[in-house]
Length: 92
Figure (cartoon, rainbow, N blue to C red):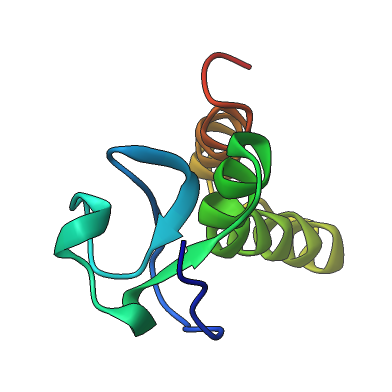
């Protein structure tokens, strides 16, 4: 299996290879170019890598809340729950 170099952007788990993530949307592995996916070695790694940008965004919201004393909204909790579920591959 090919392994691509790092590529920024929104990542999703590849539809037919659950141990890979793609920067090109939900496509089958054979439809992807060499630089559009990363072989993560395990499904758990792929889920965590796909969720990483959103995990960072959620953490940044919580830090802003701690710094300002005012939450961005209840959205920071709902987003955090959704991203945790994405990283775990199911429910929180």
